[in-house]
Amino acid sequence: MPRLLSTHLLPLAAGLALLLEGCAPELDVRARGQGLSRWRTAPHLPSFLDTHEEELRLQQGGWWGWLAPPWLGRCVVGYVKWPQAAWRAKFNVLASLVTEEEAVAMKRLLEDAPDDFDEDIDGVDKMITYEFIISSAGAQKAHDPVRSARRAQLRRITEPILRERIQPFVWARYPKAGAVCHSMIRRYLERERRTHDTHWDIPSYVSVVVSLDSSGQDFEGGFFVTTGNGEKSFIPLQRGDTVVHQSDLLHGVHVRHGERWSWAMWFQDSWDCSSRAESWWQQEAEARDPVAQTLRAMRAATQQESYSWLQEAAQAGFPRAQLYFGKALEDGLAHHAPDPPAAAAWFERSRLGGEIDACASAEIVVEAGLEGYFLGLWEQKRKNLTGARQLFEEGARFGEGKAMTELGVAYRDGWGGAKDLDLATQWFERAADFTVEAMHQSYLMYSQVRWPHLERAS
Image 1 (cartoon, one colour):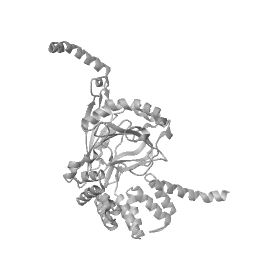
Image 2: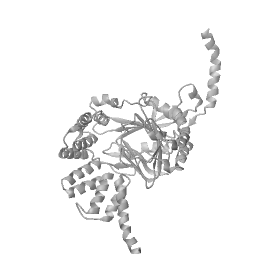
Image 3: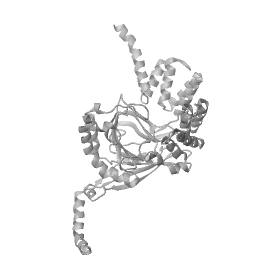
Image 4: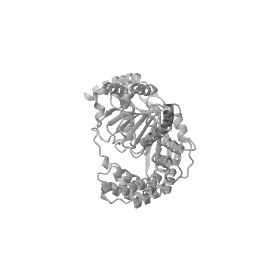
C-alpha cells in the first residue's frame, strides 16, 4: 500500500517541482566578474599566485530552499604559494554574490548613523576599528539596546543572503564549517582608518568578506593577499564581490584613495560557536610544514608550545616564522631570558629571506620592511643611530608603517643624520595610514608650523 501511494504521488510531486521552479527564477550573474578575469590573467600577476575560474550554481538546502532563487555565477579560485614551504593557502572570489541593491541598502543604513560605529582598538595593528557589529557570539556590543533597531534592519538584508548564497557555498566547500559566529560591517574613510595590517584571521575557521564598494570607482587599493615577506596583490573587488578563505590566508587592507566599506563574517567549526582551534592544521604541523607550524604557534595553549613551534619553523627557513621567533627571543617568551643579539640575528635572516626580485607596479608592491624595522630598533639600543636610521629608511621604502614613523622621528630630531622637518612631516603623513602614533605626530608637525602665524596675528 505505501508503495502504491508513492506511485500515485509522483505526478503531484512533479507538479510541485514545476510550481517551485516557477517561484524561483534564477539569479544569473555569470556575465559579471570581467575585472576579476582580467586580474587573474594579467601578465603582472605575482608568481606566488595560482588561479582558475569555475561556474557555480548555489541553492539553499532543504525543502524550503527550492523557494529561494538559485544563484548562477563565476568563482575565481586562487592559491597563495608560500616560500620555503609546500603550503598553498586557498581563497575563493565570487563575483556579484551580493546584488548591487543589497550592498547599497546595507551601506545606506549605516551612512545615516556614522556615530553608531565602535571605536575600539584593533588587536591586529592597534588602529581604531570603526566597525558595526551585526551579530556576535562573544561581543557584548552585539546586544546593546541602543543599536538594536538598526541591527534588526541589517539582519533583514543579510540573513537571506547568508541562507540562500553564502552558507550553501561555505558548507559545500568547507564541510566542517558550522555557524556564523561574528558578523560586522567595517568602513575605511578619509581621515579615519586606511589600513588593516597584514594578518591571519586566527579566531576564524572560515572568513567571508563582501565588498560594498567598487575598486577603481569608489577606492584604490583595498583587499590584498600576500606571502608577508614578498609581493602582495590587490584583488579588484567590485560591489557585491565576495572573498571566502580560511585562516591560513595572509591578507590585509590598504585603501590608498577613496572610501571602502565591507561586510565581514567568521564561521566556526561548530554550531554553538565553540571552537577547537588548537586542532586546526595540527596534522600538517606534525608533518613539519613550517606554515602550519607557525599557525599552530599562534593558537598554542601555552607560551612554551608557541615557542617550540616557532623555533622549529624558523629553523626550517620560513621567513615569517623567523621574524616571529626573533620577537619571541627579544621579549623572553615562555620564561626564556630575553636575548636581543639572537633576536637581531633572526631578524636579519628573515630580512634576507624576504628579498624578492620583483618589479613594483600599481597592483604589486614589494613588502620587505618589517624585518628592517626590528633591526633598526636593535641598532638604536646599541646606540648605532646612523645604522638604525638606514634600516628604518629601508623598511620605509618597502611600505612598513612603523619604520616610516621611526624615520620621521629621525628626521624631526636629527639623529643618525641631518635634521629635516619637511621630510619628517612627509614620512609622518605617509605613515599615518598605518599607525596612530604617526597620525598624532603629523598633527603636531602641522600645529607647530601654524603657531608662529597665530602669534604674529595676535
